[in-house]
Image (cartoon, rainbow, N blue to C red; front, side, top):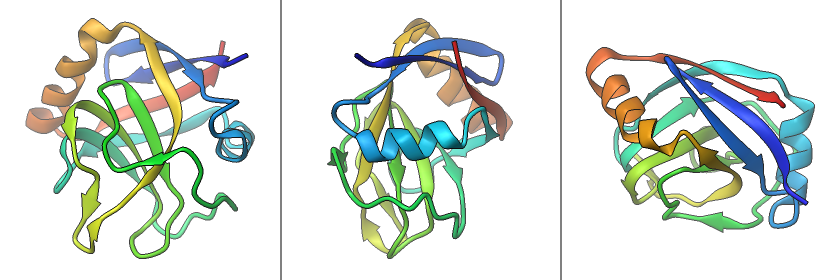
Length: 138
């Protein structure tokens, strides 16, 4: 059973679920970091997405349920390696990459409600800059 969570990004609130079955190690590591607070900035190389740069933060996970092409509303966690650790939320077409080339991140969270505001979050972040992010239990 997926774990329900709330994602607050900029002025928008989304209902979401953690992908417990598909990415159990990633979800467990992320739950340990909740409530998660940071900022999203617009991606540089990946297309229509916002991301959270996390530097050398180590969640202690490896690849699972990973993709380079998250669908709008899917959140992925790149565990680090050839590029810095990061979280990415797709709001449109994404081909996940960095200056090092194509990457794959673990799909661990899916937005389920408030999706009518997803594109607005992306464009607000693009034109107005970093937006606050909070992911919390419901």
